[in-house]
Length: 139
Image (cartoon, rainbow, N blue to C red):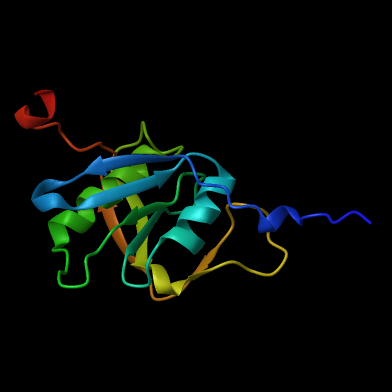
């Protein structure tokens, strides 16, 4: 008798872009639809912030939030700029980016990889950008 593992039982670590923001904030961005699902639905803690460019294809982006801290608006905007950069809006000017806590991100039943629904969103308008490297990053 053979036993088969279902595909969803395999533990696959997502391939993500990692960025460091000032004051030690960490931002993760998915590379593929499957990575986006893993990042948004499995890796993100309920209190983390989730970002995605509004109305266009792009990476899911998660701002890690330590339990004893709360990001200010400038940190949220920097994470939103990363989400805009990892999207089809990269060459655009000011781009609207949806943001919400990861606890408000869910996957509709039967939806294809990378598709989620969100609640309680705020919209941040930012220019696509990656964080600038500090002089310490070059050491």
